[in-house]
Length: 279
Image (cartoon, rainbow, N blue to C red; front, side, top):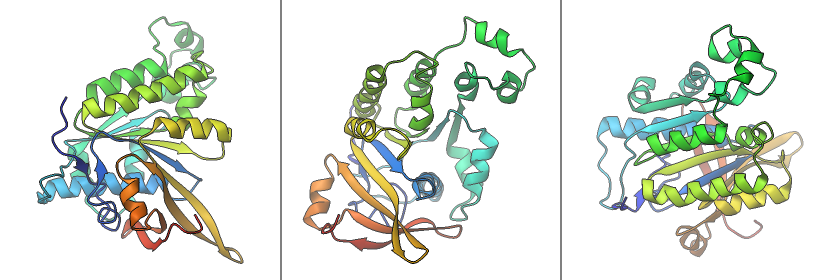
């Protein structure tokens, strides 16, 4: 699939102008974040604002386009819970998102080989032993690949999350090398799909070396963390660790590090831009 437009906006008004209108089309973007530091809110704000822009028929530059759909892939969360999280953001109408959202719930596959009762995730009352003995159960990797092949082209895809996917490798008997190969495959295919793919990963859970190897698989890495600003005070921060085709321009302008805020009325926003020095 040929890429005809070379920018896809995030939809976040305080961020897109800084990154020259959006991310390069066909980008696999890792959102690496400390708990509560803003990575989830970035995803919610981006999806909501892009849906609003599509609803309003916002006119974009010739080199920029909106994704056709928002695809949310969840390994552990129910659709109702995710929609409730979206609804906490008052920056756009939830109905507009619903029109553009495809929700893929892979929780039954995720929990199939755990001790969690099947009726907690499937709604049925089948015994756990029966579920686990079924030959029809696909691995989470297989289910994710099928989902991406079906839904990724020309869309914004949110994978929630690589943290959960990595934890499933033990049950599915998948090696670390296979996990990394899958990510490299996603990065390669994102160009053919002409899609933007956000993949969430909670930081400081896995070994730093593993985090670095995952980061190496992505086109872009946005890091969300907390920075101490005084006694009992913290500031949310975001910095662009890498981004092929984008970072050199930002470094020329000394722009890669941002103070951020999260609120119900404005969602995720960049509140202040810091220079590279001290990064």
